[in-house]
Image 1 (cartoon, rainbow, N blue to C red):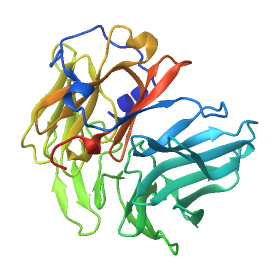
Image 2 (image 1 turned 60 degrees about the vertical axis):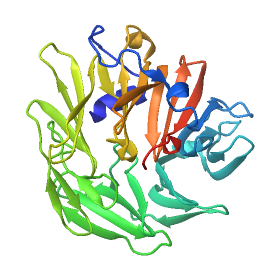
Image 3 (image 1 turned 180 degrees about the vertical axis):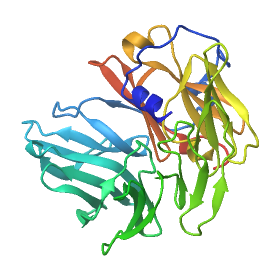
Image 4 (image 1 turned 120 degrees about the vertical axis):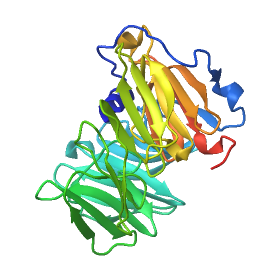
Length: 348
């Protein structure tokens, strides 16, 4: 499932089957289904002509992302609103810099920064400045998930690989100080603090949810011949039916409340399961998807059991912390669109 989401997020849909059966053939468009939800469109370039790549949204119109300097000598980390740009960090392009796992809580942003010579470090920023918190990151694990780096209770939490190939849960106060390291056998990732989920390297997927604070463990009901991934509230089960078509289902971790979300020529669109505990994000693959890399982007609302069309032709699909964004157009001429799922009416 993670591989499928990564391919979709990169706009790479290779070796797709011909069109097959699918549920909910005529979903309502987002403007009709959720007219009050906050949406925005962002040009792909900044006013200085440089290409902008968002990596986090605080709301539909405010994002944090990267862009080179006009001379190409720096990579900038920027906060972008409709009215202004603010530079958080600027690093020499020659150092191969990257900004990973960017997340936020309240007025605080946090990310893992990487350079060729400086290695990995954890940074935070507020309205006034950016500061380095620690360089004690370990072998950082990234799953293209909103939970790769989690802020909770005044601390940052992430996972790393320990020396035996198991998992380290690392935590540090946002104000700085020593990093707490707890090791456990197996491959685990954060699934929303304080929960961890296993099965990262298992083709069958997750089998256990574990509370990092209390030690509580919840066994997950798995299905033969299917891949399962879970949040604390829901599990997504992806399987292939007897005719070779995909099926996406949701259930509670104990196996109850199981329902089919989509069938046919469909695929998962993001790594995270049941965002906000309210939605499941997926795509329907069309006849031109193998040429364009784009697909029909849909969101299933769990409480109402309905599917809403977000875009008929979306690429570069990404979700973080309540905001979904994607591109419309081809690889050279496109506009980014965003939808704040938190502003859709309904129970939080």
